[in-house]
Amino acid sequence: MSKTDIFVRTAKGDQEIATQANKLPIKHRSVLIMIDGKNNEETLHSRLSGMFDGKTILSDLEAHGFIERQAGAARPAALKAVEPSLNALNTEAKKYMIDAIYQVLGPEADSMVARIEKCKNNKDLSGMIEMCRDTLAGLGKKKRAEELEVKVKAMLTS
Image (cartoon, one colour):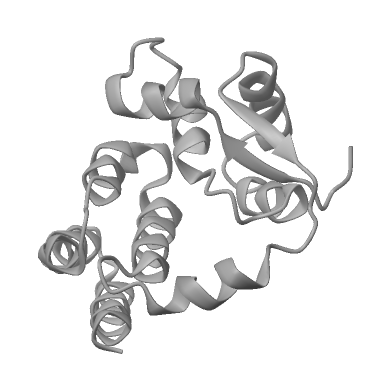
């Protein structure tokens, strides 16, 4: 086990996000949603350290087959070249929105994150910007809300 290992969701993990069939605790579900197949274990631990015991939750998810480790080797060049030019959906904008919502709401962000996760294209994702902005602003995070709106719109137009 290396801190550079990448966690990826298994088919069971993807099914859990879609159906909630296993009724995972909210904290486990929140972490499962954050697994994107890009961040290494060390990065995930640092992102989770302020919210709850991320190490234990990652271990639980792995032990129950919701996620699995992959060696942290560099991704193939072909994948790196294709990712930034995704026209159907800007995955970086989607990830940024999810991270911003989790930073403010923590595990309470699950329902909103689930809606963001379902976005299939940039038009769908654009429709979520206003809801995210209004939610953050309503919680007294007006500056953060404005930053999110500006940054996501810029990401979707570039």
